[in-house]
Image (cartoon, rainbow, N blue to C red; front, side, top):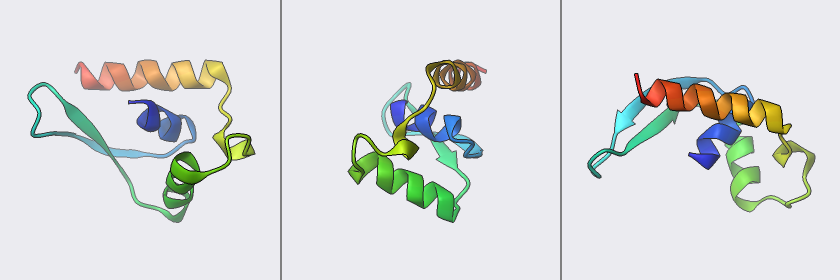
Length: 73
């Protein structure tokens, strides 16, 4: 959920929400783009102090709440 929230806060569009093999678990599917690939790499392997990793807390919380609402629909 943390990675999805980060990507959503960085204006990446969600294509859908898919069930997983684990009961009660779902995963977010994002629309593929060069920017998405770049953000994923920075999130997984980037320097902790990279400007692209920073998200204002109010944007992060807003993104998190929207994703939780989408999961509960």
